[in-house]
Length: 157
Image (cartoon, rainbow, N blue to C red; front, side, top):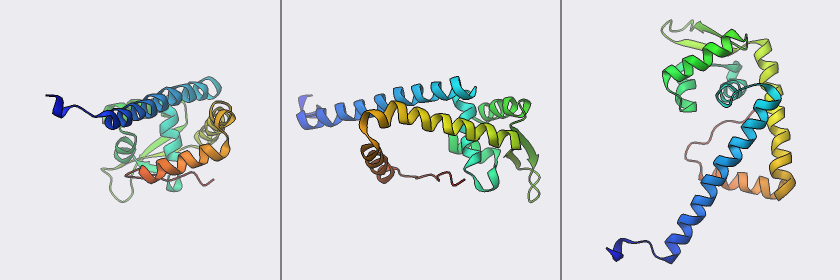
């Protein structure tokens, strides 16, 4: 059984991985709580608005939204319903394929999404950049980008 156990180097790698993933998860929770306190959006609402804000024409098919954010179809519909009720999102059938439902930001949704994004930027400056510096933060982001098997797009307002 001992031959299947991690050696000291493997244990160190595993501990470093644990520090990275658990620390990042706790930091993300804090950052999204900051966004919620300042912008009044739940983490899932912010994720949807941010995704649409950074999507071409600020529109995406609902199934793409669910897949990209790793939400269930029902979970995506529930969040979209709340955002629609708040007049931040609208849904309509695609002109190209009426079976496809498109989600789009409303003008109000664009403003709320941008306010929330700015709240997140402020929280990042306060919680991360102030502690590790802008250069280290940028370098860390570059390293993670290199490791990402499916890099996403960035906001280009």
